[in-house]
Image (tube, rainbow, N blue to C red; front, side, top):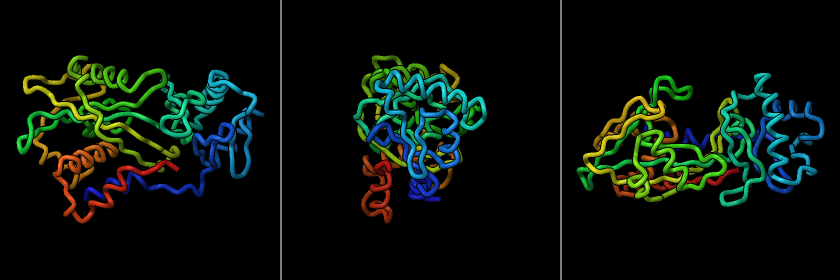
Length: 284
């Protein structure tokens, strides 16, 4: 195991079995061919071709598209063709900064290859050689990666919230961080990758925040997402990332990014260039 192994895992994919999913000229996703064929059951809602799926062009507003896609997604989930629905809507966008073309349930995002935004927060105590980092252990009741290590706070970016609003919400819900402290978090980087998984294609991009935590503040699990918080020396955090897969897969990227930004992983490292490129991959 090495730092670069984590980056390679998150950037492993092939589009050979996927077809692009368009809304008009905008490509918003990638769908596996077997699932694309299932979309033919919805008549003219999806126009399905051998090398393309596009949404019915007569659906002219984001609201109309959202309503129509929601009905199809519910049927696909009921038939077990996609994962369980989550009741949280994510925007379908062509690229970062582009307006949403429709909203789709979080549970269907990977199956449709929709780009997924979010954030991860590094909670830091102290400075220099004495820096420590708050690390979360995911609750054993989590349906995804139970018991794995995680960044102090992380979350997807649902529709209807600004980046700041989402940050403040998740900090309060996951770690009990009061708004006045969470508001001091500094956006320092963006990490992006594309990863093929059994469900489909994960196209993720998330903001990385650094937050200096007062020495007397102890985070507490609030919403049940986290089992416990641990304050670790950063050398120990780096060792865990470099030698194991104890952290949830994409949390490794956030920590590697932090190690590079703070000079703890410097240009003398043989994989410095590959890591720099791999942490900031453009979406297909």
